[in-house]
Image 1: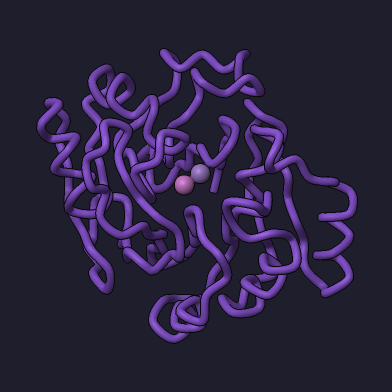
Image 2: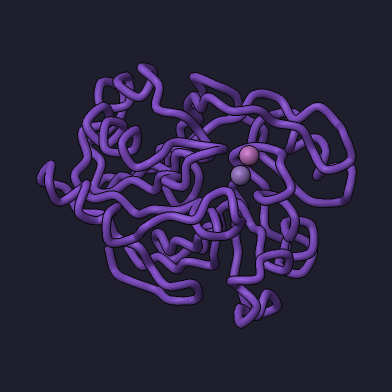
Amino acid sequence: MKITYYGHACFGVEMNGKHLLFDPFITGNELAKHVEIDKIPADYILISHGHGDHVADAEAIGKRTGAKVISNFEIVSWFEQKGLQGHPMNHGGKWTFDFGTVKYVSAIHSSVLPDGTYGGNPGGFVIWDDDQCFYFAGDTAVTMDMKLIPMLCPKLDFAIMPIGDNFTMDIQEAVLAADFVDCKKIVGCHFDTFGYIVIDKDAAKKAFEDTGKELILLPVGESADI
Ligand code: NI
Ligand code: MN
């Protein structure tokens, strides 16, 4: 699968000819100044929770592209009031779209929208088709609920996880989370954007290597086949 990193927790993933965009926060990110948001393709915008550093550019990109928002009920309702299309989900639920099946899974975090509207419970997504499966954890601590993912979903090919500490998992927790979801290939996110979450990237990669795993840290604006 081709994945593109737009900085912070924002990724584009191409799956079965559709462009999935996760947690769009670009214009407010100093590290993503070179990313042209008017050129980002999106058929679906998947949003893990309501915080500004995950939704800030969703309305603009959704209006330009006509992309459908996939998130919890509260967040989808908020975007529908702004004129976007959406597909509401909640924990434990899954739905098969034209690109694959999405399951909305637990995250330990908080969720409120930028205007103070209740943002429902934060979540993550497991997404698969017959050949491939990946996990977008969203902002979360490591949680025992992650152990349910290999019991309920196909084997993960890779997982996108926060590693920046302070607001989410740190490296040590992310290594444990990778064990819980039974995945050896982790794409890191939610690091370096703000002072609170600056990490030592070499030490982070080594921590994964030392446990037989791979940590992929994509430069902002770059794509990789994973
Ligand atoms: Ni957050
Ligand atoms: Mn965040």
